[in-house]
Length: 90
Image 1: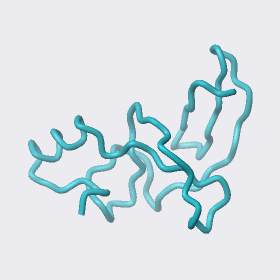
Image 2: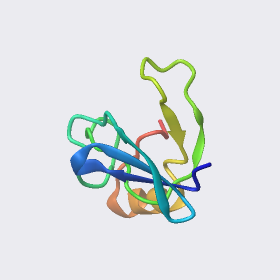
Image 3: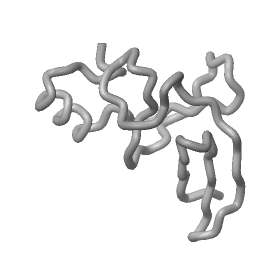
């Protein structure tokens, strides 16, 4: 069982690791403009950081769609400092 997920946004690759060893690699779909940190809904970015997988999205049109713990408290603090509303909080 995987204990770490690494997403390489520039290559659109997701790697699963178990005890430090890569066990699987997948090609993934991301937003229209995924590179760079996500700030707000509609920016086409994909969140960057350490997040937990909180579930699968059973209504997704995409195979193996995962829900993550974005935005977290750090994202919300950054939004307040930058005076914008992060995606997922509307």
